[in-house]
Length: 209
Image: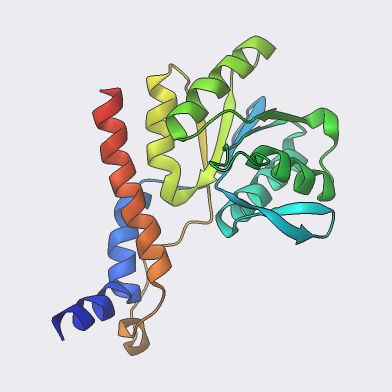
């Protein structure tokens, strides 16, 4: 009974906002920003599924980041560096899948660069820094999900890279007025992602500091 009650409470909008709010607090979409390259962090993919233009499809998390990056790219005309993730089974890396989708959405090949060696956010920052330094870019706009942004900023700053953070799809609304249905079970997946980020933040601080 107690376990069921905890699962109920943990899947409500009220609890989700409380948990996610700690990760999103202080983040906002910049109104006026200028950068010379977009760093898009891959959030995972299914590498062996049928798709419109090939094999493999980005995860829901990656799709949200990707759409945000494309909208910025269309506005500024700057290139996108996709910092991907190696699949543990040794198949195609996520950056290649994301590139195909970016092409489908109208971003040309000469505006897309790939970094496909990373296994985690710490390596995303390390390898992205090497690429943008080699190409002469100095004002990167960092695009990742709002839940993942604080950890990402931490990793990039520790590698000496000052980024312009552009969070994709903020979840919490701090002006929300709760209604009765908000206390009904909702989506435990968001809670799972938030808990993953809290653990990731702790791990990152232990490793980098």
